[in-house]
Length: 116
Image 1 (tube, helix red, strand yellow):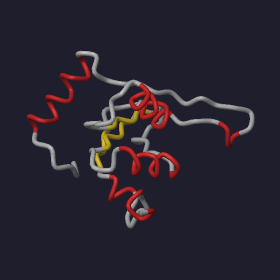
Image 2 (cartoon, rainbow, N blue to C red; image 1 turned 120 degrees about the vertical axis):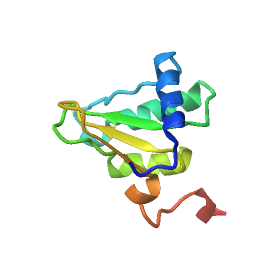
Image 3 (cartoon, one colour; image 1 turned 90 degrees about the horizontal axis):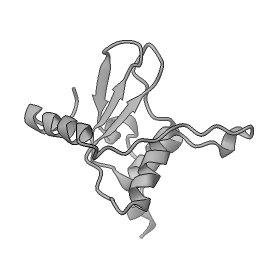
Image 4 (tube, one colour; image 1 turned 90 degrees about the vertical axis):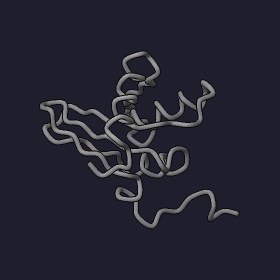
């Protein structure tokens, strides 16, 4: 796994998730494809709306055989609101999991600090 979390920190995240401190999202499709929203952006938006602006990790689960990664729009959204958290990507068909940093998924990214 490519993250800076210790095994203990990963276990703490798992425990917090089981205790209900997890925010879920879902893909919301629309006939006009560009008007849809991915689960990652739904969950991050919910966090912001509920007053929680410090995410500890992002977990993505799809129904694919391979671990599913965030799309480009979601990667940029994560860059804006949670650039330093580990991103866990799971397969819905087996126990495969990949963990990456945003820097690995979106190198040389553009963010709010470039607008100042």
